[in-house]
Image (cartoon, rainbow, N blue to C red; front, side, top):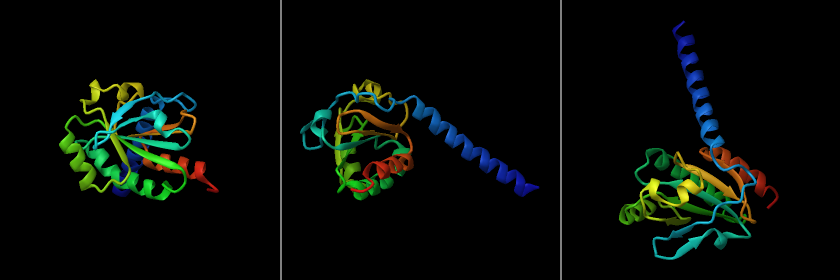
Amino acid sequence: MALACVMALCCTAQESEQDLTAKYDAALLAAGTPAPDFKLVTPDGDTLTLKDFRGKYLVLDFWAIWCKDCIAALPHVEAAFERFRDKDVMFLGVSLDDNKDNWVKGIKDYRLEYLHGSELKKWRRTDIAPAYAIDWIPTIYIIDPQGKVVLGTISVDKAVKTLERITAGK
């Protein structure tokens, strides 16, 4: 009996996680929507815009160094970057940090090899977060070579499955 109760709780927890993922994913920009342009600054002071990535698939990983869920997801995002980097897929970490030193230290500490950009403003004061309907981080978007949303999700696994489909045969 006790085992049945524990199993029921586990199944309910899994369903709740799936429900939450579906809820947050549904609030993101829909597939086919033109991706909003952005202007981000790299740790080196260079400027990045959406147009800089035209012609390739782009994965936008919205995160922040103060976000525990983001930190837990970073190794999975880095693994996806390593897996798809030679298949015409670019990755851009979009930091919602407002402290450059903490942000840059996080990139180094977690050995994140993909590109990174930030507005260096508090999350709710950025232009990019509302443009991409970011209410939860980490959030991942996949943008196609023409600048349209392929996927918006809070699930790294879902993003990887979409990248597998996109890059099949490459």
